[in-house]
Length: 139
Image 1 (cartoon, rainbow, N blue to C red):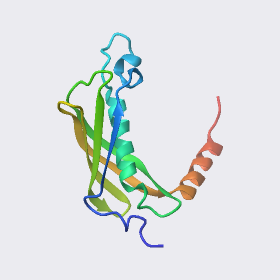
Image 2: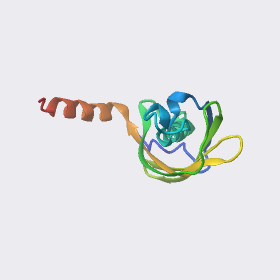
Image 3: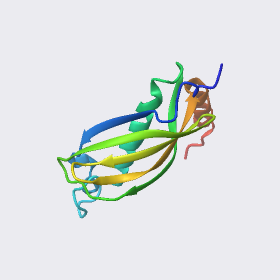
Image 4: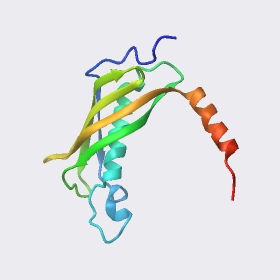
C-alpha cells in the first residue's frame, strides 16, 4: 500500500458548528465556575473538525487520532451561543497531519492553535489495545 495520507493536501479544511449547551461549560464540572464554553469542550470541537477534514480522504480501515494539541482559549462564550470551528491542513509529514485550528463565536475569536493527528490502521491499532488489555494486572 502507498502512504495512507497520499490523498490529503495542504489547505484541506473543514468547518463544524455547535451550540454551547450547559454540558459544554466549565460550570457543568464545578458549580462555582461561570457557565461558559469550557476549554476541554473547545479542544474536542477542534479535534472533531480536524478529523472530519481528512476522514473521507483516508483509505478504508484507516482513521486519524489526535497526538498533539497546542491551543489558546482567548474569550468566554455563554450558553446558547453558536461556535464555529475550522481546521486547515498546514503540514503533512508521513502519517502526521498538522492543522491550524480556530474557534469563533458571533463576535470574536474564541480559540486558536495547532493540532496534530496521526493516521493509523484501525486493525493494527486494536491489536495493540487488546495486548495492553490482556497484560493489565487487576487490583
